[in-house]
Length: 102
Image (cartoon, rainbow, N blue to C red):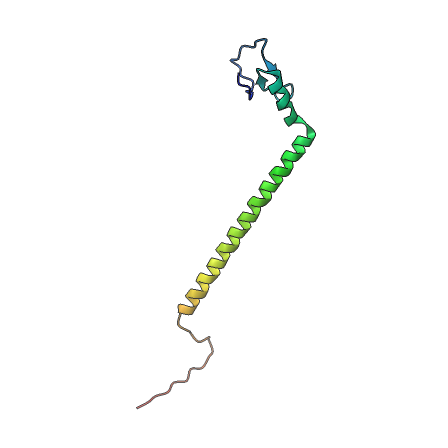
């Protein structure tokens, strides 16, 4: 067993040195390791973890929005460039005036 803890292993043979977490079942070979692990099950720690996850999620959303804005700007720029390269075509119903020179 590692001091970091392992999930319950069906092939594990229990020994007197096993210290399982009563909440999640991870097994530790030191009481001190299990005690440190138990802090992760405290409501305040869970709240801090949720806050951190929320911050990460918000950062990801912000990055996605920035990427979408950049893509839209690039598409608009490409469209403007394509429009400027097209010859002007008169709108339907517009009268054309031809000048003939000799």
